[in-house]
Image 1: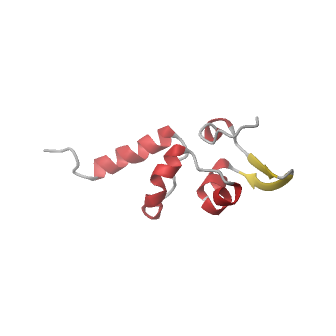
Image 2: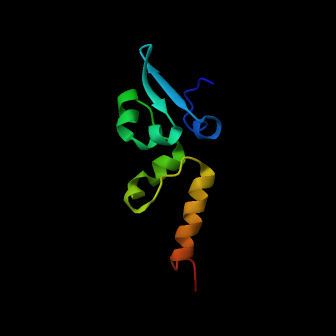
Length: 87
């Protein structure tokens, strides 16, 4: 599959191959590609939306989420640990 829609890549791809000016500049997993922000800046791309939202918190996370579902799991864990929303 070829796409520029970064939000669907984690759902459908086990491997990402990125071309720039006809040359392969990256080959690896979606996670490897999207969490390395220098890759994205170099190629004028962005991370999937869930990843972008959590990038500021990456130091406190074991792994950045690539999908909505992964982000939901992280949020559930966070809210279980915190007293947010409890009376």
